[in-house]
Image 1 (cartoon, rainbow, N blue to C red):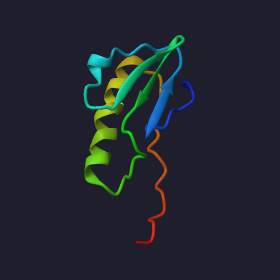
Image 2: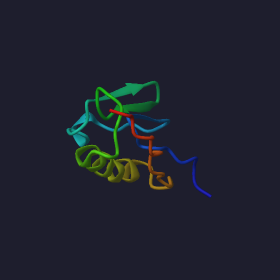
Image 3: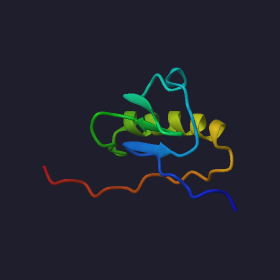
Length: 84
């Protein structure tokens, strides 16, 4: 069995993994935190009802898999729609 599965959402922390910011130019920020990497995809939470947010998550996942191939990725939970 692999490591615990991260959920790629608004932000994700990857322990014991250093991902250079150049590999994730599409995200808001990539910060080294101790021996890991904190990836913040957007300034605001992800909304999977928006095609551009879903595309962002799908673009980030392969980069994470490249750096942590033992991980099984889980999609972020769907949030209930807010009433207008």
